[in-house]
Amino acid sequence: MRIGEMVRQTGVSERLLRYYEEQGLLAPTRLPSGYRVYSDADVDTVRRVRTLLAAGLPTATIAQVLPCVRDDGPNLAPVCSDLVAQLRKERERITRAIKDLQASQGMLDAVIAAGPADTAPAIQQPVSKG
Image (cartoon, rainbow, N blue to C red; front, side, top):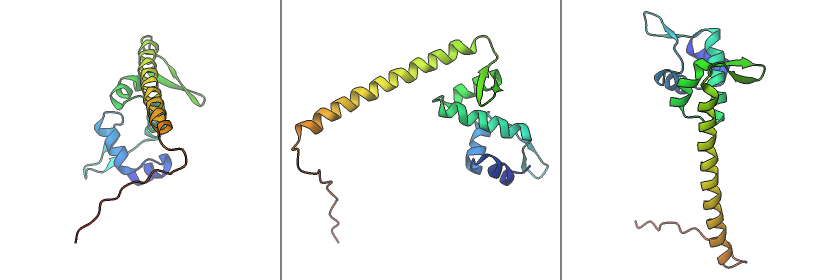
């Protein structure tokens, strides 16, 4: 299938499909004219990539993980022995990021709480001189 059909089947834009290819996540065949040709297996690969992106993995990690996962119903299951350890490290990274965001949220809450209670903040717009 050509890229337009791939977009229709996956809901992923042409630009993103090209990006996945650049990142080594997808490898469509090429016609002599240069047009990309995708297979039904590529549709499944895009779905796996989207799942791993939604799980918070960066594309560089996904490139390593992708060959080591298989479909297990609606979920992905690891098939390489060292993958679970790698995924646990990624989970720890995400947990640290969540804690950092929660700390930032707490600091922002303190700033908001120190402000006047009954006035909405006004955002200053730049004044154009013309």
